[in-house]
Amino acid sequence: MSDPSPFKARRDRLLARMAERGGGVAVVPTAPEVIRNRDTHYRYRHDSYFYYLTGFREPEALLLLVAGDEPRAILLCREKDPDREIWDGFRHGPDAARERFAMDETHAIDALDEVLASNLANQPAIYYALGHDATWDQRLTRALNSVRANSRGGVAAPPTIHDVRALLDEMRLIKDASEIALMRRAAAISAEAHRQAMRTARPGVFEYEVEAVVEQAFRRAGAQAPAYPSIVASGANACVLHYVDNDRRIADGDLLLIDAGCELDGYASDITRSFPVDGRFTGAQRDIYELVLAAQQAAVRETRAGAPWNAPHDAAVAILARGLIDLGLLRGSLDTVLENEDYRRFYMHRTGHWLGLDVHDAGEYKQGGEWRPLEVGMTLTIEPGCYVRPADDVPEAFWNIGVRIEDDALVTADGCELITAAAPKTVAEIEDWMAAGGDDA
Ligand code: GLY
Ligand code: MN
Ligand code: MN
Picture 1 (spheres, rainbow, N blue to C red):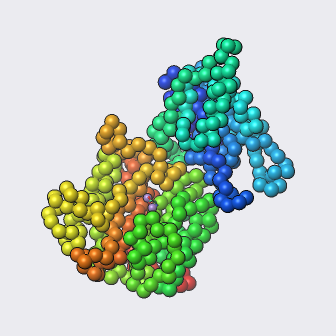
Picture 2 (cartoon, rainbow, N blue to C red):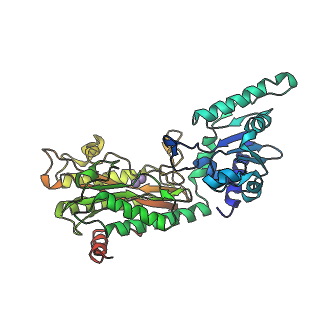
Picture 3 (cartoon, rainbow, N blue to C red):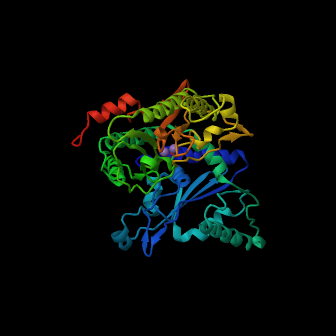
C-alpha cells in the first residue's frame, strides 16, 4: 500500500454515515492468526473490512472510528520489537503507522483494554460485527463491563450496538477508482494464468501440474495468493462443483475445467475456462460449450446499470433451458422446464456473485424483498455452467461433460466491461490458442 488516501476517504465516509445516525464508535478488528498444525500457522490474511478501512496488513490490530464533532481514526497495532522482527519480519509500530496510514492516533495493541474502554465511555452506540469472532466479542464485553463498573463516576456504556457490516457492505458494493484499478490488474494476471494453463494441459499431465502453472503465474506477476482454492477438474471431475483434489491424470479426450483467480493486494479475481485437453472440441463437448457460451453472452447483455440483480441469471437460464431441450437432455415445453426448474439437474448454481475484497464479496442481493438494481461501479461474476452426470435418460455422448465459463464484470453506465476478457473463450479462440502453443510455448 503506497497511498493511504483511498483508505482515509473510506473512513471519512463511514464516519459521516455514523454521524448521520447520531454518532458512536466503530470497532473493527483485523483477523486472528490461525494455527494450521502444532506450532505452524496458516499464511496470514487480514480481515477484509479492516483492510478496506486501513490498508494495514499486520495481525493483532484494531481500528476505532469515533464519530462526532471531532471525528477520530485510532489504530492499535503491535509495538516495534527488534527481537521478534528477526524471526517474523517487519512491524510498523504505532509511531510509524500513524503517518504511514494517515491515522489521527495510534497505540500499542497491549493498551487495548484502556484505549477501548476510554473510547466507549459515554458514546451513544457501538458499530461492530457482533458474533463474527468470539475472542473479539469477549474483549469488547470486557471493555463494556469496565465502563459499566465506573457508572458511579458518571460514565455510561453505549446502550446500542449496530452491525458495522450493514454500512460497510453498501460502501464495498460500489468500487472506487483505486479498487477498480487493482481489480483490473488482478483480472489480467488471472487471464494470463489461464492462457498459460491452456498451453500446459495435455493428456498424461496431472491436474496438479496445471494447478502449479496457474499459481506460478499468479506469484510471478506479484499476486499474493489464489483468491480461493484453485479447481483443476478433468473429465468427470468437472461435474463436481467445488472439486479441489486436483490429483487425477488428465486423459485423452477430456475437457478440463479450471476455476482459478488470484488475489492481488487484497482484491480477488475469479475466472473459469473449460477446454479440450487435446485442443479440439468433440461434437457433444462443442454442443454443451456453445450452449453455455450463448447463456453467458445473454447474461452479459443483461448486465447494466438499472437492471435487477437477477436479470443476468434469468437470461442465462432461459438460454440453457431451451438448449437442453433441443439437445434432448430435457423433455417438455420451455415454459414447463422453466416453471418446474427442471434445468437445475444440469445447472444447479446461480449465474454470479459480487466480487471484490472477498471472492464472494460483501453486499445484499435484495432490498426490501426485491432484487436490487445494478449500479455503475459494482463488480460481479457472470458464470453459467452445465454439468451432465451419467444417467439412463441422457445420451451417452454427453456423459461427464462439465462446462463453466466465468468472467468478471464491471457495471458501466450502458452495459458492462468484462475485465477478464483476455482469457480465450470462444471455440475458435481456444482452439487457435492451443494449436499455436505446443509443449515449448
Ligand atoms: N470460484 C468460486 C466461484 O466461482 O464462485
Ligand atoms: Mn465465481
Ligand atoms: Mn470461480
